[in-house]
Amino acid sequence: MISTTYILNIFLLFVLFVRAQPFNWLSLAMSATSNYAPDSVANAMDKKQYQLLCQRLPGLNPIQKVLCEQHPLTIPSIGRSAKESVYECQMQFKFDRWNCSERYEVYQNLSNAGFTFRDLLGKTLRSGNRESAFISAITSAGIVHAVTRGCSSGNLTECGCSPEPSRQRYIDVIDNNLDSLQANSQVRSSSFAWGGCSDDTTFAVKFARDFLDKFEYEQFRKTNDTRYLMNAITQNMRRQCRCHGVSGSCELKTCWLQMPKFSEVGEMLKKRYSHFAVQVAKRSKRRLRRKERSERQIPLRGNEMAYIYRSPSYCERNDSMGILGTHNRECNPTSLGADSCDLLCCGRGYNTREEVRTVRCQCKFVWCCHVKCKECTEIVQIHTCK
Ligand SMILES: *[C@@H]1O[C@H](CO)[C@@H](O)[C@H](O)[C@H]1NC(C)=O
Ligand SMILES: *[C@@H]1O[C@H](CO)[C@@H](O)[C@H](O)[C@H]1NC(C)=O
Ligand SMILES: *[C@@H]1O[C@H](CO)[C@@H](O)[C@H](O)[C@H]1NC(C)=O
Ligand SMILES: *[C@@H]1O[C@H](CO)[C@@H](O)[C@H](O)[C@H]1NC(C)=O
Ligand SMILES: *[C@@H]1O[C@H](CO)[C@@H](O)[C@H](O)[C@H]1NC(C)=O
Image (cartoon, rainbow, N blue to C red):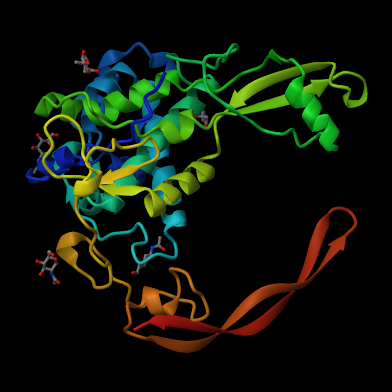
């Protein structure tokens, strides 16, 4: 059973910042998958090939390189997860002052066979604030998601999908194919058999923990009070069912477990970031403690995100902190949310200009089966922060 504690190890990341060239596996997001995929699976036993490949990968710390050699087939999934996580982060923060982008360093190392280390989101990741917590959470969840997909699809040799997922926790999802509420309640109450291929996160969670935490753990002899960032997935497995039998009579029902979509995971984590982020004391001997004195005794809960330092305003560009600032960001003068010109422009005001845009319009459905549209030009007002 996975613990519900939701805790970050960010002080350790902060300590690592002392190095000239920091480790940052998110750099993999910027290389083509072909760069780190093995030449062919026929060579799967060729250890030497993988050793070379893994040593050359940019940004990995020594433990991650060892894991790469031990489980080379997971690396394409890890690279994919880095891309997906950064993309999802940018979707979730599209309208915020911090939009999950930063000015990052590029380290060209010629002896590294052309691999370039890009310190993607590294400055934010190491700053120990709420945004660092979000990046850690979404990238950890991203590894679990991508590796589990690799397991279910049969791409990995270490794991597969589970025919009997009864040990995992799950939520029920109502089958969309059933058209009446009556049928739904029938589904809920009637018995069922596990069938097909259920997502099994066991291997991925262990792998993600080793990949993300082990190095810091060994470097700093931390207590085992480390982070469990993957619970957004493991506690939100969905049970999906299909009815068989005469016209939806549901005499026979088979069910399987599915992970939530990664965009749903992103939404969940954004909610935690917005409503359940907790500042913790910088020095803590054994476990993380809330900074707020009156709440010290309350342990952190499973849906809380821990951070140490307060965030900057992200209003003004600051290269040493990787902050882009909000000058020239597009804003919405009628919004009451984060994308309102008031909030996004930090009180500096905004400029308005007119732009001619070409859009598809007067669309008609043409039998069968496509949609025909005209092209219209329209004048739209664009508001950008001063
Ligand atoms: C370049 O990469 C090699 C091998 O990974 C490493 O030994 C060396 O320190 C790197 N050089 C710089 C300037 O980072
Ligand atoms: C499985 O591997 C194939 C070939 O490398 C790749 O195209 C596919 O996207 C992979 N699927 C998953 C879920 O990782
Ligand atoms: C802490 O975790 C490490 C690595 O997972 C494990 O080997 C060790 O036994 C654990 N220690 C305690 C006290 O639980
Ligand atoms: C960037 O932020 C750092 C730390 O807050 C501060 O010391 C520095 O003056 C800032 N630089 C600029 C150009 O604002
Ligand atoms: C984030 O905002 C900056 C301007 O502050 C912009 O250059 C960048 O494209 C934005 N990133 C995304 C992903 O929209």
